[in-house]
Length: 200
Image 1 (cartoon, rainbow, N blue to C red):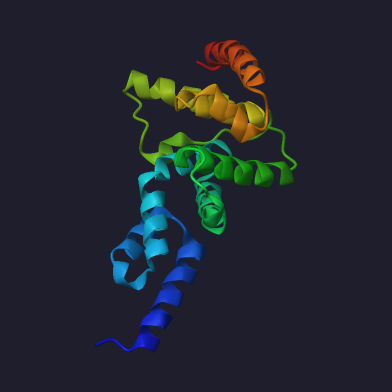
Image 2 (cartoon, one colour):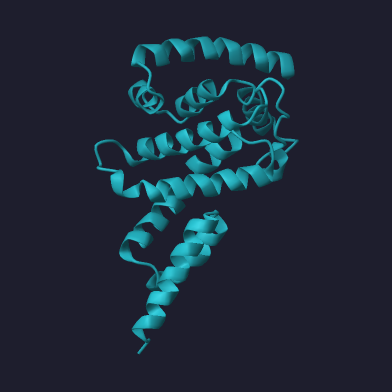
């Protein structure tokens, strides 16, 4: 029988590592030892695993390198964990996660002095998702690149729109009216079309 003190120590270590690292590969390694995690930690681990695509997309759109993307991923996971107890189920879990992820990304983004127009475009080939001989994937790559040229709020609107979030959720996440969200997105469609034609 495992000594209780040892179990508590392992749980503490796992929790600290969980909060400190946050990257999906390390989350997976933690999930291999569910007996070390509390019920709450197991629940949160599954939540991150099931919704990691959302966090990756936010991290990718607000960073310019793989290292920064990983750092932002970690920070978003940390902020999600810190605010996990505040989620009351009054909205979809994905809406809440978007709100926390975007607030985290935009806060860090605003601390930087670089302008979105002069930021170096991210090399999306590092993700392994883009294949040069696949026209559809090239279009996706181009879309990501031009979206990164937009100001931070507009990036968020486009990303949530492409994820089929209703305007009600988009407006709630960004603190704007639903009408404003619709108007902005209609304008952004024209802007994105022009940018894609220019950079194709």
